[in-house]
Length: 316
Image 1 (spheres, rainbow, N blue to C red):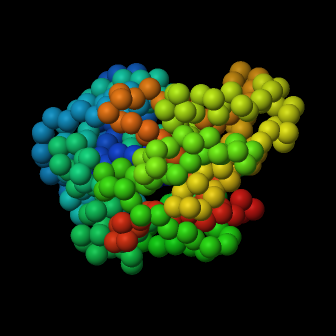
Image 2 (cartoon, helix red, strand yellow; image 1 turned 30 degrees about the vertical axis):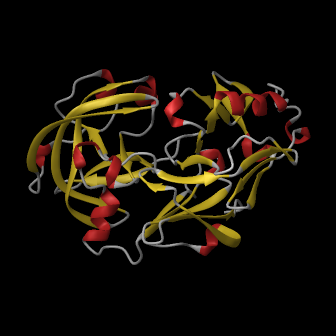
């Protein structure tokens, strides 16, 4: 799980958050929440902030891994030293889902578009742009593959060339809801599977999802064609998996997509792909999560309505 820090209030109260390009709201646990999940995390106390403005509107949000509900509040927010005035966010009173209970992060900062923001709340980065706090209306992500590393970064308002090698290639957004683009096809060992219709498959570039996900009928055979030994003994003998996006090939080598999961001292290797059970109206919907973004430094460009990819420099 990748997380960073924001502070809310005056004086500042600090929170670990997931910066999630797959949602648009900001929320943290409320001091008034007494569930076990809230008690295991940092909670926001509006009575201790001189810049707090009451709102009180109810909100609830459902994620793939659970849901939260509570009420809206407004306060000063600071992220990466950038001070945002009047950020509206959720004070969470209850959280459903083991991901929130066991997660290291206290809350979420949504980095997607206002069009999918619950209760029509202005997202943090939109406030930064509106308040002229960033140099350029874009942000970028570098996700380190080293567990426990502090090398990962979100750059607000810019692109940092030290985080990637080779060219940055841009793909236009399919729509301004999620950071959604179109992928043309997926190949295994150079053999393209024809998983997308002629117009391509919709894919959300989502920092809030760990794996790469796709429709069960399409991604299932891809997962089955990979023969990853649970004891991690044959990682390098597996084929490359390549995503064709905007006619450009983005290749994941086995060491990019095989994840080593350690639980209770036991390690097990799994493929970083998972089936998505979505209603048919979603069609051929894919999610390019952290497995992809850690391999390709990713730029989220508002003004250009586009996403950029470059090979991440994993030597940092």
